[in-house]
Length: 281
Picture 1 (cartoon, rainbow, N blue to C red):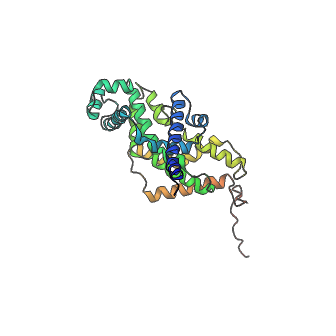
Picture 2: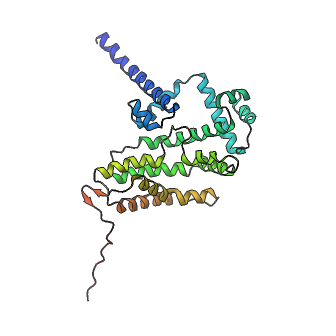
């Protein structure tokens, strides 16, 4: 085999990894400057799903500072979930096996550290949502998106962080806004807006009836998780996995029918009730 061709073939994956790392770094810089992730990805000429895939692959190459930061975030999550927002920076530093000044140098304040913990928790849980294949039909796409959303909204860590923030609402109202929006530093798109973009394209293509895409996305998400999340947040026993799956499929079906979903060109008219067979006289 030609040695030149072999060398070129071997270097191709390295070049691809290098390009991916540069794109991820470019998106991260735009996010740090205050842009939301979708705008940052457009500036860096990369799709949102590709950004999250590449970002996960490049995590193994982080430096010492980033490793210390991850250690602190991991320890802070454990301590916050155990002790609530009243946890001290000293206890977090002890759990992370670093000096208190190191925690302060990395995050500046307990409020900012809590914000970053929320960011890290949701980013890890939400990443699978942003790589859902939108080329599937509407029912399959909504079902997969909905299944991921339910895992996030009903996850014990998600509920625990919400309870902590609610408990501190009087003294630190910003914590509740952080948990509610799931977007602490613009690195996570607000989920209804993400789904709204998909629904807008479906409406433009005539797959479903035209409506307000954002309100439609909010209605879909609310029907899926609002009641189940409320029950869990007040300590009521949650639904079984089978019950959650039934809820998911019912919500997707109702949503699709309500928007006149056209599968293979056939329109579903939800405005007319199903016809009953006529009884003989």
